[in-house]
Length: 188
Image (tube, rainbow, N blue to C red; front, side, top):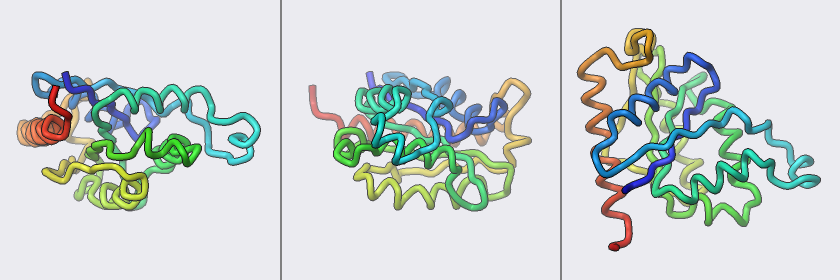
């Protein structure tokens, strides 16, 4: 079984990106599973806190979940044409101490998708993630893209994608992402 850890880059209860992550979990191909994690309990990064107390427990626990997974799926909002602060903050904490970066992120396959009320979806945010993923030494999945635009109309009241074309694009993305993970895994 391919294990994917999914992270929504939003804290909002009615987040379109959390809804997209739940839709991804429900539509992942057979042979793979998406485990949804949260960044809600991760405090603002403070080097003084890290120096005094080390990595907070919620960060340490999330790091271990990433390490245990075959891949990471970041479902990102787009704020002001870039990465949401809470998501970047989580990654900043997850990369501490620096010596842990290779264990947590080195060579890790990462997919990035997202939904936004705007007409370009999360195009700019996904581009903004690339330098971060590069410096962490990840292996981003570039086989497909998924930017869900007009998110306020894309989801129903239960958080399900209402447009069959959006759902099909999500399924196609996940199929390619899982295939990429499978080809990268060592033979059993």
